[in-house]
Amino acid sequence: MARRIWLAAGLAAALALSGPALAAGLEELAGDGEGGAWSGDFPPLRSDNDLETAADMIVDGDLEGSVPVLEGVLGRNPGNADALNLLGYVHRRLGDFEGALVYYNQALDAEPLHLGALNYLGYAYLGLDDPDAATEVLGRLQAICTQGCAEADDLAAAIEAYAAGFPIQ
Image (tube, rainbow, N blue to C red; front, side, top):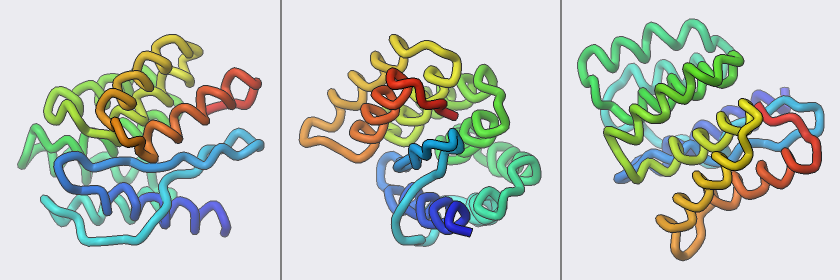
């Protein structure tokens, strides 16, 4: 139940940052190796009602079910960085790190300053046991967030946790 609350709250924060770049927010660095998601309030999504439907499905644990919904969003708007980022998140959470990289990079092609996609790209690299690439992504986040931001702080903490031997998903 607590994990579901964290996931719901966290997904909300990602959606709250829907300005120029939807930020995926903070991953819970749980010692049990299961990542959480984002934290914050749940505002309406900005571009497609199906994004909200997919987000609800992800919160409810229906990762596989959210894929065709997100693909529908992309069918109507192929460059929707938010949908691409969520597809990357779903693939990463399902253990398909290579597939996640594809979606995160597509999100960044569509929106180069997408903080959430950058944050999760770093997580995907950690999942692939490539902390150097994750550190490079952290540098990109820090260059964008000159006053600091949750995504950079979160990825820095994930890199530290990875170095300490905690599993990152």
